[in-house]
Amino acid sequence: MQVDTLITGAAVITMDEDRRILRDGVIAVQGDRIVAVGPSEELARRYTADTTVSGEGFLATPGLVNGHAHITETLIRGFLPEDLPFDEELMEWVIPLYKGHDEAEQSLSAQLAVVAMLRTGTTTFIEAGTVIALDAVMEAIAPIGIRGRVGRWCEDRAWDRAADQTGMTETACAALDADCARWPDDGRRLSVWPNLIGHSTGTDALWQHASALAQREGLGVSAHMSPVLDDPAWYLEHEGKRPIVHLSEIGVLGPWLNLVHMVQIDEAELALVAASGTNVTHCPGAAIKCGFGTTRDGLFPEMDAAGVNLVLGTDGADSHDMVRAMALMAGLFKDGRKDRGLFPAAKVLEMATINGARALGLGETIGRLAPGYKADIVLHALDRPEWRPLNNPVNQLVWSASGASVHSVWVDGERVVEAYRCTKIDEGALYARAQVAAQQILSRSGLPAHGAWSAA
Image (cartoon, rainbow, N blue to C red; front, side, top):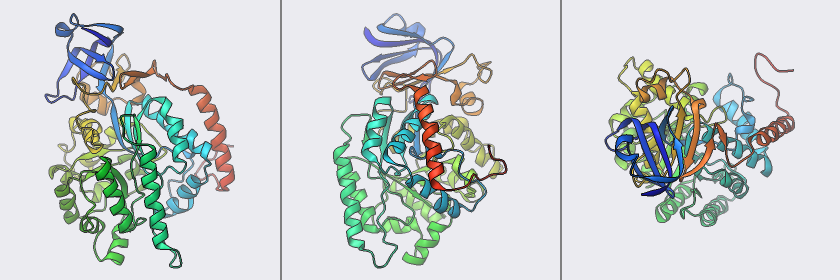
C-alpha cells in the first residue's frame, strides 16, 4: 500500500485500547490519518511511502493535549511577582498587564505560546478564554499548524449597580454568537468555543447562553472556577450555595463543560461534577506557584475515583511544557496524601492525551496512535542522558524527560516541528520581536521589577 508518510523503527507508546508499547514499530500515515501502527516485522514490508522517516533512536507518542493555556500572556513571562497574595497579583498585575497589550502584541504573544507548545509536544490546546483581539490572534497562529479551541475574554457581570446589566449580557452573548459563526468547528484545526472567564464574572444568563450555544453547535465551554476560597465565598454570599451547586441548578453542568482549577470544592460539588460528566482540568504548576492548597484541599484523587474526566493544563505564562506538568501531577498527591499509589505515570499520560481528547469532544479523533485517528505524532529523541537506558518509556517520559527532547511533531499528518524547530514560522525573528514587545509592554505598565534580584 502506498502512503504519504512512513515512520519506521521507532519505539511507540500507542495509547490504543490495549495500551501497546512497541520497541520497534511502524506508523503509516495517509492524508491526515493514521492507517496502521504495529511492529516493524509485521508492517514494514506492507507499505511504501512518499516520505519515509527513520524512527531509530526515537520514541513516538500521541500529541499531547493542553486543557488550559493562556496564550496571550506569554510576553509577561517572568515579570509577575510570586510573593504577593493571589488576589493582589491577579488584580494589580496580571489583568492590567494583560489588558495593556495591543492587537499586534497579543498576536505575537499567541505565536510564541503556540511555538512553545508545539516544540514540547503539545498538538492540541484549549485556550483559557483570555483573548481580546480574537480575529487577529486566530489569523496569527493558524499558519503555525497547531490544533486548538480558542475563546475571547468574556464576562458580563455589572459590578457597578448603575450599569446596564441587561445590555452587558446581551452584548456578551452576541459576541459569543458572532465569534463562533466566524470561526466555526468545520474541520479546520482552529475554531472558537464560547469560553467564559468564570469565577463570579458571569451572570446566569451568560452561562446558560454559552452552554446552549455549545450544545447546539457541538462545541465546548471552558471556565475558571474555585482555585481559591474566593469563588465559594462569593457564591455562598450572593446565591446561598456553593458555585458548583449553583451551576448545576441553572443547568450548565455537562460533558460539554471544562472547569479549570477546582481546588476548593467539597464532596457534594464533586458528586455533581461526576454525575453530570463535566470535565475538570488541573493545572499543577499554577496551583503550587499560586499556593492554592491543592495537595492539602484538592479532591483530585477522589475525583479520579469517582470517574471524573481529569485533564492536565499548563495555565499561564510560566511554562507551556506539558511534560513538566505531567511530572508535577504524578508527584503532588503522592506527597500530599503520603500514598505512592496515586496518579501513576500511566494515568497521568492518559490525562495528557485521551482524557484531554475526550474533554474536547475528540475522543475518537485524537489522543491515540491508532488506525483512523488523526496523525498527531510526536518523536522524542532518545539519545539523550534523560532517556538512556530506555527501560520503561512511560515512566521515563513522565519522570525523567521534559519537552526539550521533542525532535519532530506532526499535526494532521503535516510535519510542523523538525530537528527541534518549527517548520512554519521563523523562530529567530519571532524571538527578537517578542523581546522588543515585552520591554515596551512592561515599560508602559509602570509596574516595578519585583523580586529579590533585578537585572540592570
